Image 1 (tube, one colour):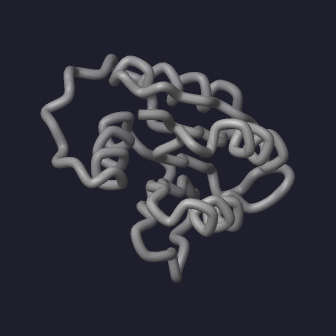
Image 2 (image 1 turned 90 degrees about the horizontal axis):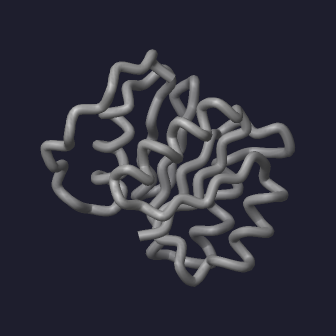
Length: 128
């Protein structure tokens, strides 16, 4: 499974990529809407899940995810946000900041429609 991770905060993006990679996911990390569009155009055929921050320096993660979902209706989406987003499109999963890394694992499983496994312990990290 391939994940397109869109996170403008370098430290958070790197940590999330590490966690997802350790769980066996191929993770393409980008930091902006523009980078995400470039990667999407090259890899959209293999991306199964988009995880995006809602607030990006050059646009809305939600709008971008809707754009990608229009091109691929089967695309799973997780929206990371510091505030509750009303009127989330059907099937989108919201992950509110701050969150524990285990919550990320659960959100991924919910988004891709798999039951949540008992994941291996994740080393203590502060909430993101």
